[in-house]
Each structure stands twice: as structure tokens, then as C-alpha cells.
Amino acid sequence: PRRILDIATGTGDLAIKLARSIDGCHVDGVDLSQGMIDIGRRKVADAGLDDRITLNVGDCLDLKIADDSYDAITVAYGVRNFEHLLTGYQEMARVLRPGGRLCVIELSTPRGWLVRPLYRFYTKVIIPALGRLISKDVRAYSYLPESIEAVPQGETMIELMRRAGLVRCHYRPLTFGVCTIYTAYKE
Image 1 (cartoon, rainbow, N blue to C red):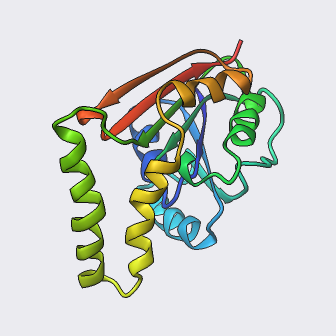
Image 2 (cartoon, helix red, strand yellow; image 1 turned 180 degrees about the vertical axis):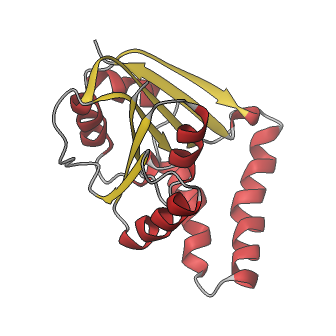
């Protein structure tokens, strides 16, 4: 892909990785947080990638981008924070060019009988306990497992992508189901 949109780009880590990995591509990153974008812009400048990466504040539910603009769209660990997930996917489908690919990686809840209880203990007990030791914002560390459980997963996520007009939607769980990669295309 030559034109890539990284939604919920945060501090631009994935945008930087993409620009370094794909010769000749340009990556536009969008995130709601001005603070994250400011940090990302410094990282992009330090990496010498100002000419290949542009980071801007924007709302993924109302992208100020023309239809059919991007060859690929990425979202890494961001869709679980969308207020209206279907609207977000509809916007991605709108700005993706025909034949373009969407790739979403998101945290998920393992389904296996052995891994699931260990995962629940880790996310419900260990993460909040460490959060209390490290940070004064205890809520931030309990939000993570709650947001993972609340986001649609597997076939339910794929159905939302289809409803948004995307095709050839697939998912693949990784690391025993702790995260999942979702892919889809625009016809």
C-alpha cells in the first residue's frame, strides 16, 4: 500500500513501524488526543520520517477525509474505545479505496478452558494491583479488562465489519486468544 491511514494512532508507534517497513508509503495517523499526537509528532521527527508520516487530531467516527482515499487502514488496540463501533467501521469503509484492506488488532478474551481462568486472574487481580502501586489512577487499570470484555469479539466483530460494507472479513486469534487480528476488504 502507498497510502495508509492509522486510526487511533496514539503516539504513532505503528505509523512509524509501517513507514520503516514499507518503502515509498505515506502514513496518516489520526487520534482524538492532542497530547498523544504531540508526543507522536516528536517521535516522527526524531525518527526522521516527517516527510512520510502526518499525524493529526481527528474523530474516527467522523473522519474529515475524502471517500476512497486509502489503500490500507490499520487500527491497533483502539476499536474497543470507539463510542459507536459500527459507525467507526462505516467511516473506515468509506475512506478505504475499492480493493483496499483493513487490518485491526485488538485485545480479546481467551476462550480456552486452561488459559481463560489464568487470563481473568491476571486482568482482574494482577493488573489492578500493579496499577495501584504504579499510578494514582486506579480506574485506568480496571478499565482495560472491562473494555476488553465489552468489545465484540470473533464472529460478532466480523458481523459488524460486514454490516459496514466490508467483505472477505476474517479473524485470527493470537497468543492463546489474548489478542485477535481482524482483516477485511472493500469491494
